[in-house]
Image 1: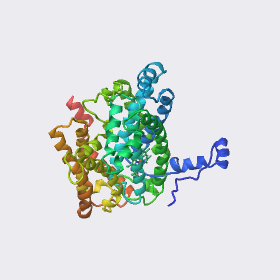
Image 2: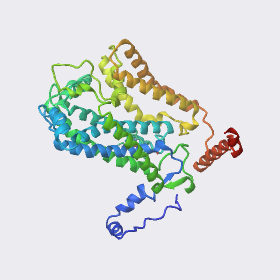
Image 3: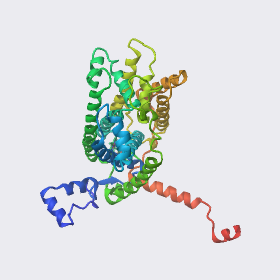
Image 4: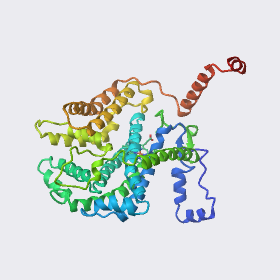
Length: 439
Ligand code: HEM
């Protein structure tokens, strides 16, 4: 499809022309995120979160590199290097650390919104299955990176978190225990584990950045989905990425970064666990071992098996936790509905919101102490999670009658505008005489 507004790349600056003739990188950028990339004209704010995820990934890499210059990866030195050296002696070290700590939370927050946006608008469906699957690879890498990063300050929660999570590997039959010892480089978290977690925590974000490039490349083949889920028909349905979406992404990113700055400056430890300000002590187990908030829903699934049934309960927990993520890889084939957007799927839409509530409940259970009530709620919520993807979604996609789809993106935009104008026209207006009478 050709877009008449999309002018071929013409370097304006002589330096750009010089570079472009030798290495056509400016041309590639123009075609990928510049005035040469067509984007549906009706994207709403939920489409800003991919770019935000990219911004937070960059923040994490930049602050992480500087933190690593001062961090001491030894079981004797790690805690003090973080809590004394970086927090007190390094110039603006406290800021670097707080930005990195809270940056991780914001990175997960915007990524979760990005994932749920994809779930609601059916962005995982053909022809974007690979975009979705590469996104899931990024998500798995993010979880591994976050887990290993949390071990680095070598506080109580770092140590016991590493202990508990690696312990779950030992639930696997035959290979479990050797695997755990192999991962840790010993029988318990110690220097070997800290060294390798530090090395991998430094490496993985660059791998994530590589997969992000593949993710966006795969997206640029079909182009973005949009709130109607209807395919782009002709050039009237699109706008050039620059200046329209660079402006929209830009101001929205500024607003989110302002909020991020408020949390980082005024509530830097709100999302953290106070026990991690106590140095790691292998002889004193904390009352509650809780991972960071963004891993809590999966932690709840992991802990929801309390009795052995054919297999040990612990193994069921590990299998359930991994399947909870792995089944998302099959989502494009589980949901067979030809309609993408939840906007035109009345039944799907309701179950989508139930899923959102279910994941929030799982998060609450994951962060709560183990009591009969929380265990029961966790079991119901875990069961519902699987029910949603394995039973409800296939049934809904087979039997639901979708609402009529607009013929095109432009038609949907115009319909909305007309509806808005009609609603505005119906509103009682205060004429000058009415205002004067009221006064
Ligand atoms: C470092 C993390 C990530 C970055 C930087 C990133 C970046 C992006 C960007 C820039 C876009 C285009 C803009 C937009 O649609 O928001 C996009 C689209 C998309 N992403 Fe991601 N993403 C990340 C993680 C994920 C994850 C974890 C998933 C899902 C599991 C995912 C699934 C998708 C899908 C399905 C689209 C296509 C959306 C559409 O066209 O409707 N992404 N991503």
